[in-house]
Image 1 (tube, rainbow, N blue to C red):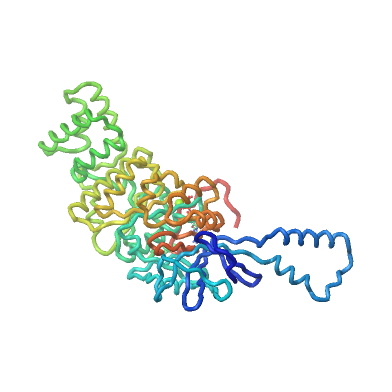
Image 2 (cartoon, protein in one colour; image 1 turned 90 degrees about the vertical axis):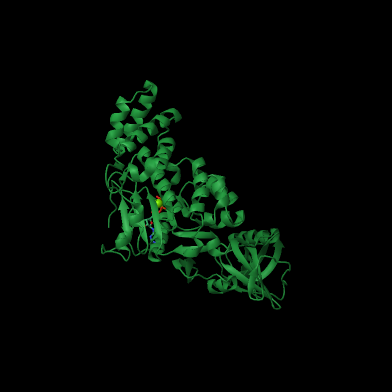
Length: 477
Ligand SMILES: Nc1ncnc2c1ncn2[C@@H]1O[C@H](COP(=O)(O)OP(=O)(O)OP(=O)(O)O)[C@@H](O)[C@H]1O
Ligand SMILES: [Mg+2]
């Protein structure tokens, strides 16, 4: 390979037939003791006007004469080689100074003298100083194993996005599983009831984290007592999930206080009080309709009930909130209650920081509210990973705070533009690499890869992967 030209912060490299590099590969350009790392992001034919005319001419001659042309100097094969020449477009990522990468590249390598070779992931990691204590093996990059570190998700905001069936939830399950193995506490908002599979291996035997996976369904395994939720969480739920007007909210808490004083706080007691309380009929209507939502959600238990602090003892656990069969209202109520309660426990330092995985978050929380939640929750120690196939469902404020993005394939131009505009890597790289990523491969961007994008082939999983779409027509075999 040879350097052909420089164009802004990219180099055009001339590659002959034997030179191979895949999109996403890193190359090291060495020139008299100095070196720089570049990343291939696109591949094209070498085309000049004369080359094209040449090819057309040869086709015309071939078509009109059946005889072999006399070519004693073997010019034909030479010209064929030229026609097969390709151009790799590569972004200049960093220069190597004293064995370390710096983003400050102030020199231009020689076109004649410089040597170009593949940079192995291992070499790149040691140049970057990318190490950690809690590895998460994600899969392979090129022909090497690739891992990120749990530390890079800790305290961070992460987005996993890509089109349908591209392998987002698969990666997310892999992250959850390894985090739990490392002793972390993870809460998952699961819309497909698929994360429960983490408890089992593919052959149906219990997995290594079997005892630490807790699948909770709102109204069944997940029932909370009003007392445990507290006023703040219930008020947030009434306001944000059930759109309760302020006047009714005031009355509701007057009833709450009265019952609490009598030590009879419970769903049933609230229902009775709503019917007999001396209030304006409009307010009563508002209260009655909310009360019915609360009652039918079966989210509240009069005694006992689930306690997060009890589940978050010992070394690591995954709390999977299975919301696949819940209605939109129940989902919103559940998420509101769970998040408020967790923030409350974190504030009081009853539980350690947690990782939150939210699948298709826009389906149960309003977009403006998420942003507030992210900022606030990160402060308290809730580190969120959004998993979505709709990148425009998350607003720009969230993208501005994001630390890591795992980007799977997108072919839809508007999704691609959206993500190219807001993400942490340059638009050219994203447009070109992501458009052609095969299923189950992703481009990792951000802190986890020290801001150098890496194409990763996500590993197959040893645990049961549920969540496949139910079909009417079964596939044969
Ligand atoms: N790296 C992988 N190795 C083996 N199988 C995989 C891998 N990634 C995904 N799969 C399988 O491909 C299918 C689709 O993956 P997954 O459910 O993760 O997609 P998704 O992007 O979450 O899709 P959706 O948008 O529908 O939620 C699943 O059956 C999953 O088990
Ligand atoms: Mg999914």
